Image (cartoon, rainbow over all chains, first blue to last red):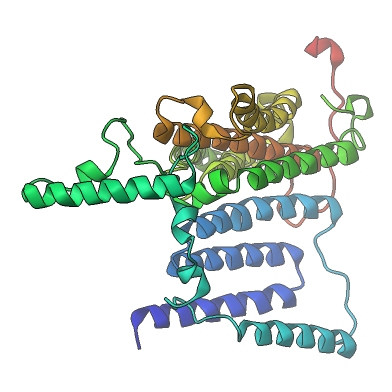
Length: 231
Length: 161
């Protein structure tokens, strides 16, 4: 049994315990703190799965900001859960069925870390993760690929002629002072900001919309009515 | 929590590091994990921590609503403006090469950096706005399981003007 597997099992067990405790606990402040712990454990789990960006977001948003906002909401609404009825069997059945279907759906997914998974074998995988910047002089992607192959061939030839010389110097554009060799090192940022730039722009607009809605709904409603409205 | 010495001292010591870490995340967005969104959230968390310890009114004093309102819009404007700048220079929308046509390989990270700053500004401003609006009407968020809402003190207009 590898160490990673032990770590995964321990983390997942803790996550499960925290999730059940979050549901069961009566004091809502405790529930908020438990959900914060849940997010922190999830962040640890993402790190164990090598998804550092996701872990970063989970820790900052899930464990940080949402906890603060939930506490702020509890200040407004009240901190004790109302008394619940006994277990509602139809609701439990629906939840169990939905969860069962989701787990059944995951059976079709490739195994974790499978090198034959579609995500790892997709033919344009390289194109997603490298910014070859062919747009500047109107070259198509094929042109750039051919150019790169030629450059690689030239580099190989030169490497054959001068075995001591590093081939990589010739393969990459030495005419530019290009520290990133045409793509940024963080592939996640590269995809989010460059490849899916529109998507991220509208996500930002959605966040702005959320803030504006909150201003329109809450600002000036309590306390000081004369200070309502935008700006 | 203004009277709690421990909280006050801890907040005073932590906030500079949080802001510093947020700036690190922002500046290194294209190099390592993180980026504008995470940086914005962390910097907002630093301000919100200040607001929780020293009171929401004090928080609104150091970050007035006008600032957060304008910053929230400004961030989206920076993001979209980066795209429109390329459009005006004869490139496709959001083609970061327009920022430095002589060196496309370096223009791409520049564009990403600009865009990330936009995201960071909007996210931090909106998060602070959310906290400000939720705590409006309360002197400070009370974390001790106390749900009583403390009415805001009536503002003295002559003092402000």
